[in-house]
View: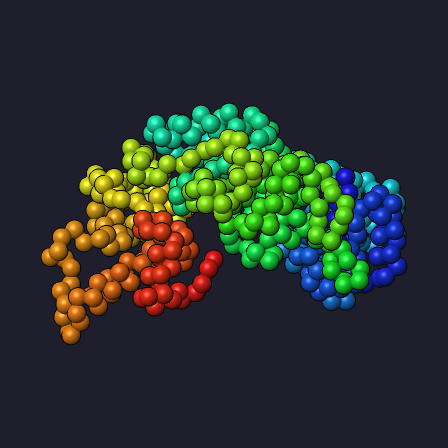
Amino acid sequence: MSVKILTVDDDINVLKSVEELLSLKKHKVFPHLTVRDALANFDDVQPDMAIVDFYMPDMTGIEAMKRLHERNPELPVVILTASREVNDAIEAIKSGAYHYLTKPILTDELFFTVDKIAEQVKLKDENRRLKEELGKRYQFDSIIGRSGALQDVFVVLNRAVKTKSTILITGESGTGKELIARAAHYNSNRVGGPFIKVNCAAIPESMLEAELFGIEKNIATGVAARPGKFELADGGSIFMDEIGEMSGATQAKVLRVLQEREVERIGSAKPKKVDIRIIAATNIDIAEAVREKKFRSDLYYRLNVFHIHMPPLARRKDDIPLLAEYFVKKYCEENGLPEKTLEPRALDYLCRRPWPGNIRELENAIERSVGTAEGDAITLADVEDIHIAPPPASADEVETPVNGKNLDDVVADYERKLLVAALERNRWKQNKAAQEMGISERSIWYKIKKLGIAPEKEGE
Ligand SMILES: Nc1ncnc2c1ncn2[C@@H]1O[C@H](COP(=O)(O)OP(=O)(O)OP(=O)(O)O)[C@@H](O)[C@H]1O
Ligand SMILES: [Mg+2]
């Protein structure tokens, strides 16, 4: 296995010979004449090991090693010493050097030392990968809920992970679409490959194509080559979020990828085969978009091989106690707090509240209440103060026309307040806010204009 080796020596001849020798073994060597330069390049290089001279004008090898260890405490450092200075070698080892080599450097000693380190780097990498995979295998466990509605989701998910067919995940904002998409990848036999996410709504239309398909190098214009997300996902899964936001042109291109299983970078005529599983998600009613001819029906059918619909939290209220408990535990742990308990009255309140923002809203609410709860119990007051003004239950609660405001003004003020709150909860995405408020996109657009609502900061 080839490793990246940072070398530091004020003697350029030593640097050259070390580089020449190690290049024979296909290692990548990054030589530096001063420690300062080596440190400056450290983050770019991300070396697997370093070879450092003991005597240098700007600092000793021991000091240099300490500085390198500040960047990466586990970096194996080999110190170069003059053969007569046995004490230096001992000092180096005592200070945490992996090994020392005496000058003039003997080729086989150098090779042996570097090979041993390379072997360890490889083992460590493998260990980390195995651990990651093990962790990921339990990802189904991170999907909390026992409600019937969620069981239906598991049935389809279990079938889908055994295949490489496309999965379409629909559902309101915050219902766990991304969580399911990740679970689908990490519980499939593609777990060794990448999980690549692309949010079709967050990328300007003009850049989406390049993002998805990549760009071929163009010598004439100086454009550098860049792979697209489809290519990056080769051997793994690509999660296409907010698929309903793609333009007709992009839809046509994505359809081609699904049909041909190959991609073409912009500016290239050479298609490349890709082995990918596509997982798409949307919070719009995509069947409706198809009927309205906003979404291609042929693409819809290709995507919709497995369909998972995430029910809104209102339809799985039985899961609220489990979810609440899970989030309390999660945020206590994350904040290094002893585990708090939810008082029955607080839990009862959470179970009865409507959750238009679904699980994300519940999660945020609990996160805040964990922060505000003073003792080891989360009380009703802690959870109550997180609620977003619900529509008034009776006429008494409504502000009466005062201060020269007539009824229309008061109604407009109230409408504005509700709209801004809904827009803020949905990061100023009008379609999402409209959905949450149960009105059409057209009518939210109209109201925003009429009421002169403007976001403080736009978009994501
Ligand atoms: N069943 C569940 N168990 C535990 N956590 C969940 C569950 N469902 C959702 N969550 C958590 O709720 C949050 C929102 O979920 P996620 O991002 O997957 O929703 P989404 O449907 O993709 O929302 P959006 O449409 O707004 O992107 C995440 O932090 C996720 O981990
Ligand atoms: Mg999402």
